[in-house]
Image (tube, rainbow, N blue to C red):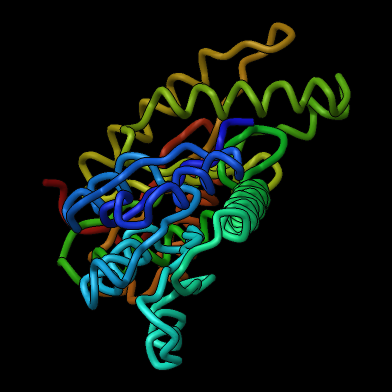
Length: 307
């Protein structure tokens, strides 16, 4: 494990040998910042495990530095040990209200400070570890385990955000739903493991058919969704046809894997919500199915004119 990083705001010489000795006893590595600007720069480049602020040297500016660092880190935990100038309870309370984890008073005992630093550093790393686990779990809950692309829940959240953004800024937004044709035959004939392999390959091919700003999701079963921000009808048709053509070139046990695709576009007088956009694309998808499959169909009534 790397040594603790301890960032001190102030002049360590004022505390004599107590601070360096305490950091050494705790197994940490001391960094010193003499100005608020240095504190903020160090906090941005590498988040320290513990920040030590000597209020006797900094005064109210030390509290300002603490609040600014907390704002920079957002959800990340910042362990802070403050050294009060005296025994006044009001100063200690103000430090705690500003976000300090520990408040010590002078004179500082090196052994006690070392123990406080160790506890604060462990707290910070433990909290960060928990946040990482929560983040990883959240990402897993929004990802389709089979294909590695976002799942339906993730799609729904993203579509709501993109639709609101399109409404707010009067931007176009396209949605493409695609369904693999006769996919049940693949599962029934060759087994689900083979069908799963096809779904994974389809997901990979979709990634190469869209822009980085577009969003791919497994909508369910053998159905996928493409959210295309700032895309009008002409652009959506181009993407959908590219996808249809690329998938039609995919052979599996001497048969081509084809897909039917439905497109819906915003703005449109009949579409006032993300749910309506999905219904419209879904209707278009089933139109493509009815018209013979391996086709691209537009939502009816006709979407806005191509750009």
